[in-house]
Image 1 (cartoon, rainbow, N blue to C red):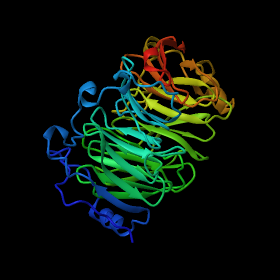
Image 2: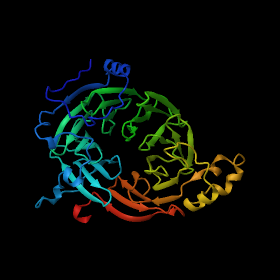
Image 3: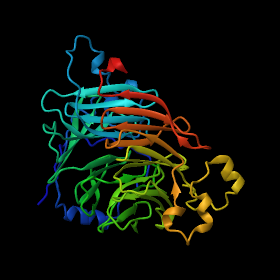
Image 4: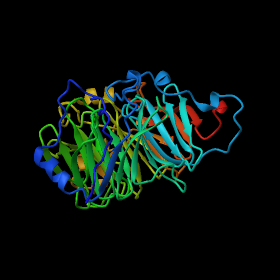
Length: 437
């Protein structure tokens, strides 16, 4: 039987004391408590959390990055030179303003624009960190050990407080953790075939979900205040499950015939983009009713999709794959109205978006194979084929930020009217010594 244990010290501060979080129903909570077959134990080390009010966990408070997080160790003089670390993990924070890297030596946090390393933590023993999940810009991180010499067991989620430069809590499981997602009010832990949702204020288990085998740890969660939408693989190949916690509804969408390889949510949780293991098509759905709103084509040959990302206004969708090209697609859907923009006139389309490569063949739909009437990307950026890249939209207009597991950082700009090849604005390699930046 699984056990849950905690110290008798005061509970974590409520991250949203004036809010009414959307928790799972009582029946869901009871069911979760009775069937913790994968959940092993939870320990909260919070005896020091109330000694200094500045050190209390407050996921609802965005802090200035430079003051919230400790300075980089490379600023300390006389440190011996060491070989570059091997990257194990890369991820953007929730608003894509920062990104985190996990390596065989520890973890680092970077700002995207302007690019700079904010701080790093290199561990003496082992040091491998396979997952680093940020919570916007606050001092709290979720860490999971990884690599050949993991700093922490890979079946544990460690809650790191950088004000104290130590872990203040942990969640322990009977199998390895594949991914972690954070909201201001929730912690989501992804295992190979199960997902656990915890309340951030007290680490209480709120909900658990069974999934098909999910070795990539696929999971996405909305970041809008109040209403929470969670997306994960369903129990069938090609199926995604959408949990609407505000209305306590579950929606299943048969998105593809083959297995799900990648998906992404808009910040408000209204739109969902999915890609299958074939990697040729990307589909955009309405999460409320599962309606297919748009389908775009990355290419004709198979590819492994590494990441999908919506722009803040859901006007653009970026896609990265093992083919070495980042694509930007123009979306004809609106995150607020969640309907096709059929009212856009030809003049308006010509003025505000590049012409679609499929437009000249639109009259032949139903006659030619579907391939010839596909919607293709309007902008592209070429990278080294075979390397793994993730992508997000920058805070400057019409910019894209690309991170590579080879340590590369690109910031590019695309032309929203004429499209074509993107312009590279910036390049860095995070594995090089900081003096090179």
